[in-house]
Image 1 (tube, rainbow, N blue to C red):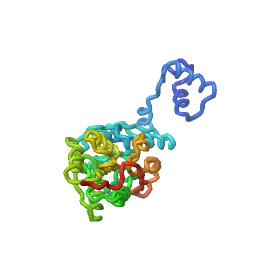
Image 2 (spheres, rainbow, N blue to C red):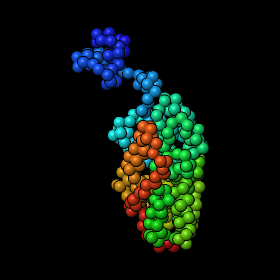
Image 3 (cartoon, one colour):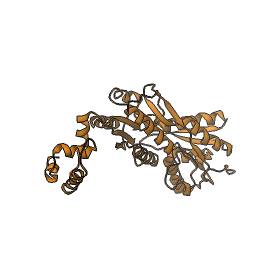
Image 4 (spheres, rainbow, N blue to C red):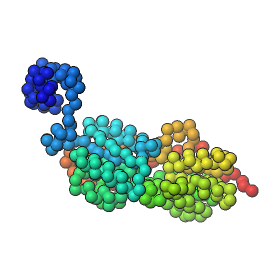
Length: 329
């Protein structure tokens, strides 16, 4: 700022007022400062400025696995919502993690950057892990349902969305169904979706084969083996990404979809899913991002709204990867 002031022929205080758009300064002084800033390539130290004023406005975002289309779509929509709300967004993403350890470290880094609030968009950081930060800044869970009463949340209605896709499979007439279920530590939302599917299938009087999935084994081979060995006619998965993995495996084995086996997923956010004809539930990612940012904006502005857990319903996408089961020998 001293260099800018010298180049512009004004005081350092004038440079500060121009850059912060506060206080009094003439149009001529403003023009001189902006020209000097451009010529010198000066970038204001926003973090230092906010530390000095004790008025940070940035929101930290922890995002799980940006390579996953569902999380990527959520990131895009949260960035849009932040821009619309004129809120700076600082994001971090973690791909491979075990029991949320790396993600907790990312949260610590965001806190160290003096963010005004945290949006946690990940399925495997627990409420207990978040509790350590609750006295530092406002925290909001985005995407995953939240059980803790002290954390705000805007999430997908996993139970209702799982009901939509399961009833669709049962209505198609499938009697033997395999469900791929990730571990609770791997992804709580996926675990809950699969568990709901399993319970609804059993309640409908059908046979369900539960295939456990973890980092070492995605369960695809075991599920496809049941098509050949146990007469399974439908494989249900908790995400579209897993659904496409099953479809690739079926293609390698010469099992046509949906001719010999129907396959379903959930999220409806994978680019090109409409062209692939995926049978899924489309999650309301745009509405979730808008509501989450609106709530976080209230929290960082000190409006202290009543703590709330919102759950948003998706829409069934029938697709072409599900059909009535063929007569089998």
